[in-house]
Image (cartoon, rainbow, N blue to C red; front, top):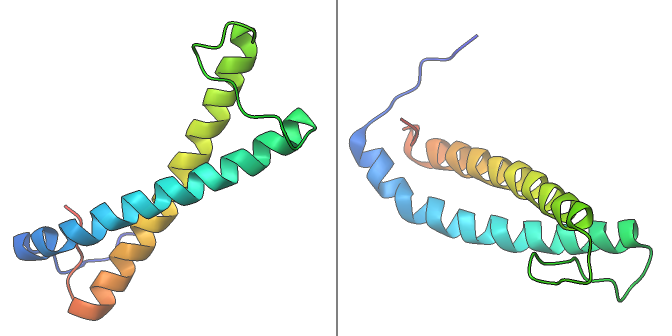
Length: 98
């Protein structure tokens, strides 16, 4: 069931700085979460996730790390974006989405 929300071009424009700050915050939070998840998955405190240019890791491990990181980032960003939009709507009465 979809709700009818007030939408305006000015709300979208005013929300843009909030969205940018939210994206930066989401990236930082997602990065911290991913590092903790990877430490648990790799069974060690010193285990950093592999990067694509590290030849000592098999491709399978690099792709697994990238997939986990992508999922975590997407979920955290969606939560932050939705929360920011709801807070913006509560403050202004306008939904910032398209």
